[in-house]
Amino acid sequence: MKRLVMTLAVLTTVLGASPAWAHEEINPKSFPTGTPTFFTLSAANEEKADLTKVTLTAPSGVNFGATTKEPPGWTVSKTDSVLTWTGGAVKPDEFEHWGYEIDSADQPGNLTYKITLGFADGKTDDVNVVVTAVARATTATTTPVTAKASAPIKKDEGRANVAPGIGIAALVLALVAGGLALRRRDGPAAATTVPEQDW
Image 1 (cartoon, one colour):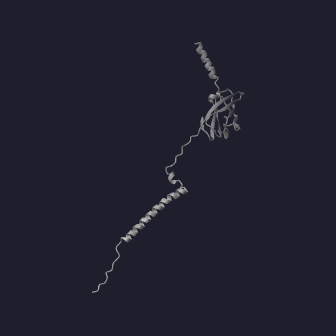
Image 2 (cartoon, one colour):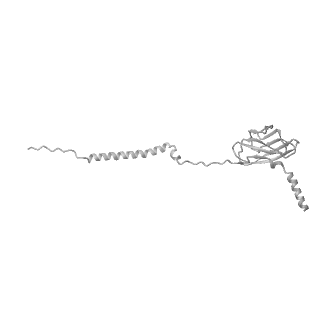
Image 3 (cartoon, one colour):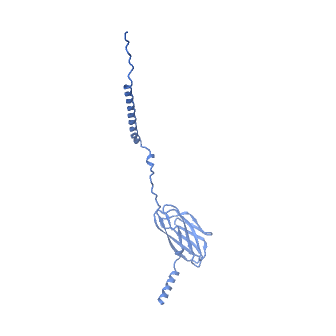
């Protein structure tokens, strides 16, 4: 029984001392590579003092874009890789949202943001939050059935197609001419005159 009580006491101490990262989130948790994306950072204040500073450090190879969003009373200072929000306060047991943009992520994979929470009593908490860059879906291109018929004809192909047409037309004309000649030859015999006879 003593062992059970001691185990529960240890678990309670460990769980009570768990870091604040369990209540810090970045959404969306996954996003496509190669495109600017907007994110929302959510942070909860689980300390006794006000949360007065939030610093977000970008993963290696990721740059912040120009756009940010702050709760009322907060301001932001920024570089390509670090955003720092100050001037406001999140009371204990409350949470707030901050928004930011990244230019893009070139490669798929997990990206780890470092969040540093600063409190009015001088305490800080560092939290790591992972988001995932996903390769953009590519759609297979299909060639329409009519593409062949509407494709432009090359110069040499045009000549090759015209030549048989001319040959066929010449053959038809020759047959017609031959038929007309035969008709004339085999047509009704020319009228003959009966020589006058002396009576």
